[in-house]
Structure formats: structure tokens, C-alpha cells
Image (cartoon, rainbow, N blue to C red; front, side, top):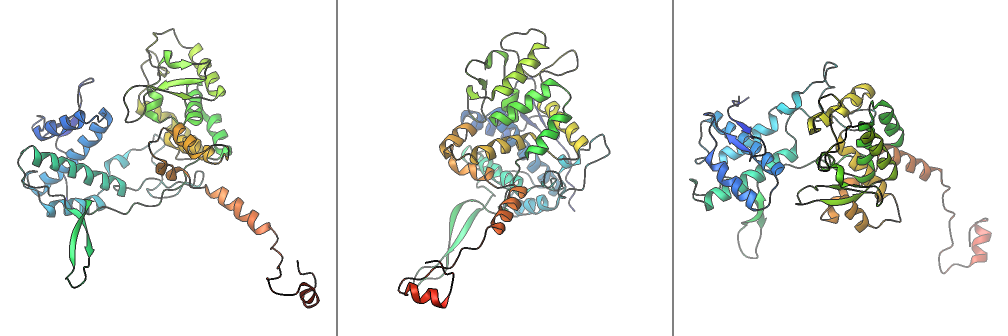
Length: 388
């Protein structure tokens, strides 16, 4: 197994841009140029951070094989994909205070979801290939060193009458992995009741109530501010994923009540202050990692593997199950740009499939009917009880 050194890092100072620092601690100039293109194209800071980690992982791999990023070719990209398919993902090494997680890839009996595998997921590998393809495309256009991109495109075989087989590029990076079918992640009502019973603070109950009644992502929850709550209309203001500015999203009345109960116990703050603060004093704005610990405590107590995105899936599952809502209504409430993205949320839970199958098996078989062209009286004589 190739040992990839952990040289360099992704760094950010305050609210400044994300930097990829090399082994010498200095910013990688190629990344600075590429980041400028991303920012000019409207990419968010979160997207830049994700791209930075992909570029840093690629530079670390090249350092292990002794090739500069300007000299990398198709062989290095191929070996990089092979390494990602077998290497352990450092992000999977996190352990809880209880002494560790269940083995990677095993299925949790309470939620029906599998724990993340120990390696890099196929979707992660595909994302890394897409980032490399865009990075080298910019490097070639900006004359940063390489003469062509080392990331090959997928090709298809086309046969023409009277001609030999030809191979034509069809676009998209080669070596893309087949992604598994998405598993249903909606939580059942009994499990949700257990989750709320395990919560310790009004803040946590309000957080989950907002996520369940609006489908808000974790980043959207953290973007809520005090003056962005309109109780009269029943809406709150959030910063949506991948879009500038704020939007108003509807909430259930119960969620607004829980927000009011939580804020009533908090000190008075400025209108632009974040809604969600830490419980410990002095209070600080809640971060994503602190918010994730809320569910870590719940998972430890209940023996589950619930994530914040599961509440979004549950919200979408409820909307899709309501015949009075159209698909465009669900798309708008989910804040999706395309209807096709709803397919990831439409999978039925296993308990629902079992119930539907049992209902199907319990229905009586339909009675046989007489086909067209046969005499009804004669058929009744031959087959008494036949439905006309």
C-alpha cells in the first residue's frame, strides 16, 4: 500500500479565502489562480474549501510518487483512482467517547442505514476527478505549466458502416465510479419520538423541529439570525446552499413555539446575532461541528446513526407522500433547481415496503371474468360462480 505523506494543509485566516499550503508552508500558486476562477464564477466559500481539500489530496499523492503536478499524466491519474479505491479515509477515524463506532459498512438496525465505509466513497472519487479536470483545464488555459490535462475523458465505441471501430470522446472524466443506489434515509415516527425524548435542551429541540418542518440543511440552520424570524407569517430567513442572499422558508407553528421558548431563556442580543448559540457560557455562535455533537449524544444513547441530513430526507418523504402537493411544490419547498434531484428522496423505507407487501398479500385474488366472444350462460354452466 502506497504511503501518502500528510504534507501541506488547507488553511483559512478569519473570513479570508481558503489557502492550500505546500510542504514549505507557503500558498500553492496554482491553487491561488484556480481559486480566483472559482470565486469569479460565483462559487461559495464552502465550495472553495471542498475543492482545496481535493487539490491538497492530489498534491500529497504526487509527492508520494515523486511527480510534480505539472508533469502528471494519465498514469498518475489512474493510479490515484486506484489508491483512493483502497486507501483508508482519515475522516472515518473519528471515535466517540463511548469507545468507538461499529465496524464501517455495517447496518444500524434502528435506522436501517449503513455506517460509512472505511475508504473513500465512489461519489467522493468522482468529485475528486471532476475537481482535477477543472483544475487542469484552468492550468492549461492560464499557461501555468502543463500542456494538456492528464485527466482523460470517457470514450465510447462507435461503429460506422464499412469502417473500423472508432472511439469518440463523450465528455466527463474517465475512471468514474459506479455509485450505489441511494438508501432511504427518512426516519420513522416512533424513532423521531425517541430522538426528541433523548434531547436535553430547548435549543436542540428547536433545531430539530426547524429541520423537520422545513428541510433546512445544516448550513441553512446555522445562517438563521434573530431578526430573520417572522412569527406572523410563519417563516424564517436563511442563506440557501449555493445561492447568494437570503430567502424566506415556511415553518410549522410548533417549531416557531420551540424557537420562542429557547430565545426567551437567552440574553437579549442584536438583531443580526445568530439564533443558535452554545449552551456553555460565555456563549458563542454554534458551529457545524458543535451542532453535530448534538446528534452524536443522541446516537450514543439510542444506538443509532442519525445525521442532520436525515431530517431533510424525512421532510421530503412526508411531502412526497401527500397527494395534495405537486412535484413543483415539493421542489420549491426543498429549494432544488431541478425536479430530478427529488429522486434521491423518493425511496420508501423498509418498514413501509413491508406494510405495503402485507396489504397486497391480504387482498383477495380477483375473480376470473369471461373473455369477449364467449356465451355468458354457457360459461356459467361450465364454471359456476364465474363473474359475468
